[in-house]
Amino acid sequence: MKTEIRTISEESLREAKKIISAGGVVAFHTETVYGLGANAFDDSAVESVFALKGRPADNPLIAHVHAGYDLSRLIDFDPPYAARLREAFLPGPLTMVYPSVGKVSRYVSCGLTTLAIRIPSSPAAQAFLRAVDLPIAAPSANVSKHVSPVTAEHVYDDFNGKIPLILDGGECAGGIESTVLDCTGEVPQILREGLVTRAMIAEVAGDCGVYRMKSGEKPKSPGMAYRHYSPRCGTAYCYTAEEARRVYLEEEARGGRPRILCDGACARELNGLNVLCLGETGEEMARRLYSLLRRGEKEATLLIGVIPRETEGVMAGVLNRMKRAFGVE
Ligand code: AMP
Ligand code: MG
Picture 1 (cartoon, protein in one colour):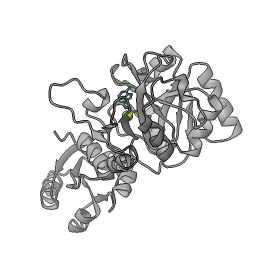
Picture 2 (picture 1 turned 180 degrees about the vertical axis):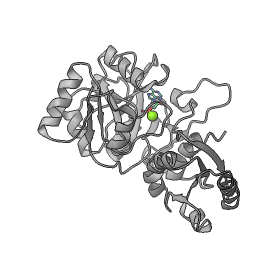
Picture 3 (picture 1 turned 90 degrees about the vertical axis):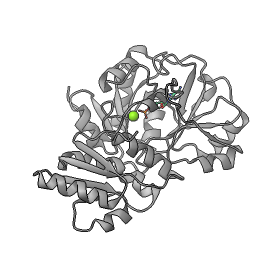
Picture 4 (picture 1 turned 120 degrees about the vertical axis):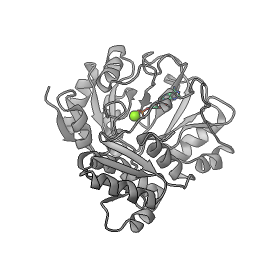
């Protein structure tokens, strides 16, 4: 199969609609990462998304809809805070989990009675979702466990020859996946941290919890249990610039090509070494993280991640992705 990368136009949207109606899969730009989308009502189309990615069968997908879509067709309970959150943050990088009316394919939520819905703000995503006018079940458009894609080329690297169309909307401005928020209880609870932070949600909803999986417990958000975002090269992690320098020099002495992935302050301490600098703010680090992980796996024999200390705001999401990319327990 030939894989085409096309920007948004009347023709490419017509093509996307044709593929989706026939049960096929289309990759599309969003403001967080690229998605791999199929008609959420179509069992076999949804199954093929799992097969293409090699995604575990218990890791549910998010249903993406355009801003004008009538959500009552998909969900049947709506706590008052949910309406306020939609008003404040949608369209945008916030996925909300509701009790499902069970209309979409049972493969979307992997047997859970809930449905995760996202309304992306990227104009390319909105154009695609409006053109198909269907809920599109979509995980990130990477092979399972690999680094998530933030450019059409990243999607192409993972799925060339396997999908017909990538709708190119440029580089994703957000850079890490949406915040996933459980809206089935009295108080909303973050299942996955992202660009919409706990403080932002609490300000609108009055309160906001963060779900932490206890060891041995069945996870509330199944995908969170897996190692993910892994670069395909040797990896190591540490917490200080000094440690990173030592591991770097050891790898160099072995004849390897080390690279260090770290924030701006750490990069300045490591002046002279080959460093992939994530930047200064949480937002900047989120935007660069996956591109640099993908660049690192191409250049390095050993990619050394320096795990940041900061845990607040957007950094909570960046830290979560970095820990899982480098296998930090
Ligand atoms: P991905 O699209 O690859 O970023 O993965 C979507 C993530 O959303 C999954 O890994 C789950 O953690 C979460 N998710 C999707 N649907 C649900 C749901 N119904 N309940 C809880 N979490 C969900
Ligand atoms: Mg993913």
